[in-house]
Length: 185
Image (cartoon, rainbow, N blue to C red):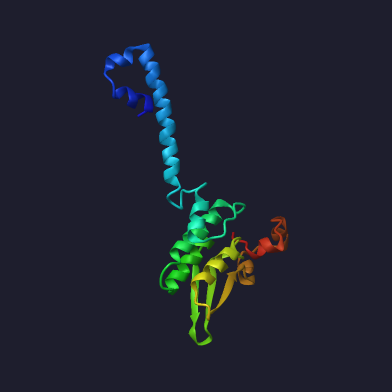
């Protein structure tokens, strides 16, 4: 229902027939619509997924370095990771934090004998664009005495051979070496 109709529904029909009263109600409806939009905008800042201009408040609250030059989605993933990273450190927690950044599946491998944790990016190829943020978040939650290794997935020669493309067909794709390493058909 349009805001103008909502406002008119609050007064008796006789007022709605008056041009002067109708204009006043219409003007009031515009102001109420603007107010409702503003309230919705403020409410959006209360949730990380919908926040935009309120991200700096989230970052300040969580002790995260504010970098407004970073894309909003990367800033949101840092905030979400920081929130998820509160509590006892488990493989599930580490996986949850890493996946909040990588937008893909991550395996966490523990090597207790060597005091090492390996984070393997298994569903996305190459190095995630926000790897520094991932590394900082993981370092924040993993105990300091543990070393952290990162493994990245790239295309293999077996995968290339299985595609049955000639060198000319590969060349026609115009891929750089970096693009070929992360290529998914």
